[in-house]
Length: 120
Length: 421
Image (cartoon, rainbow over all chains, first blue to last red; front, side):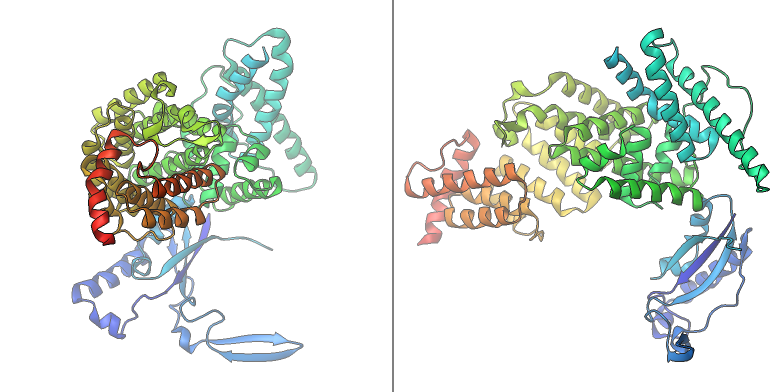
């Protein structure tokens, strides 16, 4: 069965930020290694490229046939989604174990797991 | 006969539902099949008597019903050209050798991906066999709310595929903690007067001790519940709250205390020193006369280091006050936050009263009362306030001080007067 894992950055330091630079080299390397390992985990599929920063997001609505465009993400900056990946697994526990290895989950963000659904 | 049937149903429900879920892979189908089998049994056994292996009888009947139903649904589905539900096994039912899958069931019900209220409700429904209405009444929510909660939980188990199994070793520790937390929560709900929940929690605790005999915390939790429950009869006199120190030990259930001690010794024998074992050890000491307050304070200290809980520290303060005097206890209490916790204020009030600091004691009792909804507890605090008012005008002080209390008051009465100067 497929699960979609949504990555929320929360307060996770992004590469280039002061918070990121405050991390030691070892910590930074560990984070890259963990991402690498995640991409190598059997069953993990990354269906989309990594997302750019939420401050560069544009949100579009259509009201009364008119396109309304606003700056920023649909939800707040802190709540904005940071990326997603798909896991093929037998049950929820297996996905929880994968999600717990995503660096974001321990750095101030969180992973939301949703079962994939077929609507058509 | 009715009582015997009730007892068998009570004992067998959880096991039958668990096996059926294992067999059918579906909570709703399993519950329906179990309900049908129990209904048939209620009718049949009244005439034929209870069979020698009631679980096998119930399981066979339930499985047959469920299989019939799936076949019916499947042929209907086939006619409609839809995919049929997957029937896991069609092997003939082996009488009397049903695996006990209650453990799988409780781990599924208490899975952390479910909200804690749902974990509790699902555990009581599937394992305990309480009806939705009974659970709703016990938790003071409307029946439709509770029904909705159960439906949603079962839907999530299915949709997110929460596994029906005993967790693998790397997950087992935290998942056992989750199960124990659910049982403890049920017990606590029961402790504030809803006896049926306390009994339910103890029943679940016994089942767990049987299913996980090697886990000291499981025995610790059961022991602690047995100790507290043994004093249930003495906690109230004529509907009024009686504090531990004022309870009549002859009203404690000595048999249950003995059972608690046996569980505690199992837990200690397994090298247990976790939070539940420590709380059980404390509860065991509370059931001794005279009470060893020094040791209780030390155990609360150990528990506090494990849990970092200010409430545990408050309890330690009470034990320290008993062992070393109210002033020492009060010093600990005054370092705690917990401004919105009614027992902080009632504890302060009690210690201040013992120290003869009547004004401050009154203020603290009033603060505690403002934070208390419970009728019996409010009346208790009102009685204390009335006693204080009497003590303030009569030199004799509060009416029924124990030896310890009198010593405290005398020793620190002087300190209080100096402060008033």
